[in-house]
Image (cartoon, rainbow, N blue to C red; front, side, top):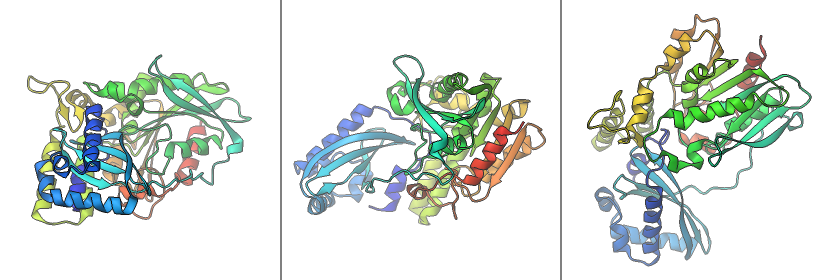
Length: 439
């Protein structure tokens, strides 16, 4: 398959978007592969949108399925297991079990539930968690708990240092999109790294599963960051204050990416926080971040053809539709823009995170940014710095080598970088621990 098709499907891979019509998407994916198993290639080909039909003909599809059979043997089971919104598209992962091995697939669907792309998912080898060298598991303990309302609870872990009294507690708040409690991306687990690293230095933490991962059906109508992030962050903060041995007046929020963008807002909702960390936090509107990410990915493709440039221009048109600040008669709260309801965009677009942070005389604030981060750039750090550098309660730190997952890298790279296990920077962990413990 041509790389351009893959970019169309994965255009806005890093945006915060959630599954729509998951059951229909799963059924469509399963029906498609059932037709392939039955060798009804004409019917299977009808699932494609017009563009894909011309690029992947019925005969090509037949050959593709034959090649898969030659390599992996007879298909024994093909089941859709995951749906993830990616901008205007939806990527459905189908788990394939064959006589001679396993092979997963990813189908890209448009809003009309037509297939716009199909490709083989990278083999998922079992990768053991890479415990950072700075983590000493003998110095802390972990306890599984739940946060949130009854019937809609989220699994969480409290990590507490041993033989320490009156210790601080850090609450981790996720970035965009569904995420587990470790903040897992690829084979990396930045929240787990940070929790272990800080606990080894006498600092407790609370991390929890993001609601959009466990309860996606709660987000098939109009919602805002209140339901997505803020409510659960507040519940986690309340839990942190009750941790045995903790200092309830020394609770910190570590917000990553979107979580960092919302950290000033969280501080206004919980005025007695001791501090907030804005890690790789956008200072601009989310739309600006998506535009930059999109252009970066297109630049990485190194394709200067007119057709590819048109794809970028068309994508920008769609992305810019998210710059709305109010609803109207033609734009309803649940109107979908880039996979998110219009209400979400109007709410977020009327929030000025830099102004809110600047208005805070307390808690203390730590703003950090990595130079090898292709998702949120130095331009955002510079905006934070210009607004906050004269405030006594603010520390600003730029780490030239860190990427978006806060690990040290030699270049910005692409999403493929996240498939290599690299721990969160020890320098960063040390800096955070020192800042948290400072009076």
